Length: 459
Image (tube, rainbow, N blue to C red; front, side, top):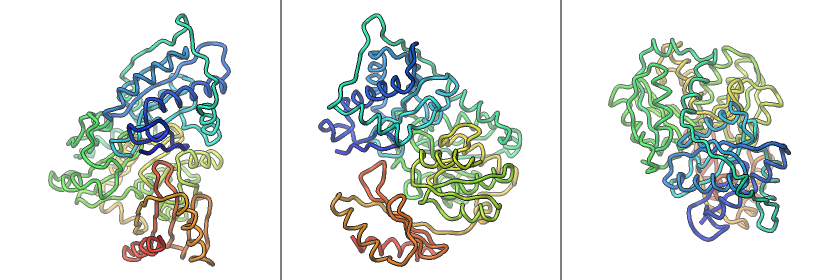
């Protein structure tokens, strides 16, 4: 059993003993700590209210009932938006001027996981400091909770049109050209992983006048494949796109904050190039800094140099990217996993926004995805993940530092080793699973794979 706590939220495998997995006790403990943190942070005299939503996982409905009961027991009013997406919930907090919100999701983790993504009143993930305070208040050794009497229980409101509101907000952005997308008469295959992407993405494409072929779009939580949207997990849609002669394919993760694309010929456009291509489109219309993570492809750095804008990298994690974006007033940012952050909508990853920006770009350029990708630096990235123990972890990092002594290194998030201007290795502990992630990049696929094998040999 596994329970992971980080700025990405609380998530874990279902069942097991308290403290070792994602159980009802964890839901009670962390949501109670969240309410205490929220009240302490806002210090209002009137009533509080928050937004509650869930992805399509089998257990999300069950846990959401418990979550709402806890909020009401504290005298907090709740708007239940039901089956939804993480970015929809964030935007709803802003639009409703709510005090916060919690999304029941384990994001890209497998279906035997679930979790809580927690937001502040700005519709953003809690900062590192805010999470530190919340974890302190959630600790079983501390008892700060003050439950309401029967006269002051929170009220529940159920509304189900917020995905539609989210989509309307996106297509109202001046940078999204609904008409040019409609005129392109695109045919697109959608893999909704049998979660809320199966609702939200086809709804968006209908607004944009796109002919849609659905795959795994029933939000029953029975994930059709490993939900992380990378090439190894998307064999079905990679086969389907050229089969039906579609212009492209779209795949999202279960809570719809990450998006990847499939080329018309079945080639994988690449999760790293989602951000690169969208940044290219944004920088044609706006001039300003770009921010991404240490694990993201240097293709974005190359694009920034070409466009004459500043490029910044941060430790992996949405909150880290957003913090830097605010500091430097970035016009676009995100992560190399297909997460797009465009501040003019909201500071948060948003797959529906990413899809709209991407389709506007290809509709205006009138080119295929395989041709579009050739515009950018042709790097090859290799990725592996391995289980670890704390003891082995410390020895391993020590050995790596010794092995690559003399090379430029960045220690902000694990170790990133720069072997040359265009070759690097990044080794870091995941914030969402008990694993070490190893990424390498080179102009050669063979070299990129070799760099990973060199690291693995040290283990």
